[in-house]
Amino acid sequence: MSTLIEARALAYGHPGRTLGSDINLDVTEGEVLCVLGPNGGGKTTLFRTLLGLLPTHDGSISLRGKPLHDCTDAERARMMAYVPQAGNTYFAFTVRDVILMGRTAHLGLFDRPGAKDIAAADAAMNELNITHLADKTITQISGGERQLALIARALAQESPLLIMDEPTASLDFGNQALILHEILRLKASGRSVLFCTHDPDHALQCADRALLLHHGNVLALDVPREVVTAANLHTLYGVEVQLIEDAARGHAFCRPRLQAVQAPPL
Image (cartoon, rainbow, N blue to C red; front, side, top):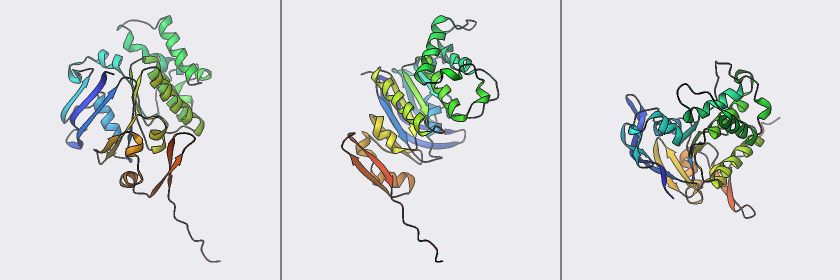
């Protein structure tokens, strides 16, 4: 399997402030890499650096062996699709138009979307069960629905690597399961996914490897069952965790150890 993206001795952060350093990671074809870490731990900043949206502070990033800074915007877009966290939007595009924006990587400056582009957008909406939202404006749907639209936009882009920033945030339980299923479907089709989450169960369920990011630095990187441990999760989140084996499903799941609270005397 060839390597799609590779970072070596990477230091990253914001202008004048380094958040993390000595990051070594790679994502190969057909691989799912999950990044776990607490709020404010640098996950989004790391992803934006890997995408070339923020400059590196040190080290290197390459796409298929080519330095990221030597790649054009179009080359990056054809290689990587980005799913940001859903937020407020101020332009009343329809959901279909938002998803069609994912096709710009395949169009010239003055080209209009053609039949192939419309078919890719429709297929992405169908895959995520949001076809009924196609003609609604993006400003008038829920945050969870906007998140699904952004994921559909990335699917329509048809890049070999999807970088997804907390793709299940703001989604209900059923749609979280839908997105995890989609990640596994992408892997089965040969595409790669780099995503972050606050739920270690997601890494255990669908990732080939997990990277634990602690204060901007790598705490551990290996197959999930080796690094998603009670000790590492306590280091990351400051809570006691119990890992319970699920033999029927072939993986463990996590449960926080909650202390009993005494009821006040009557």
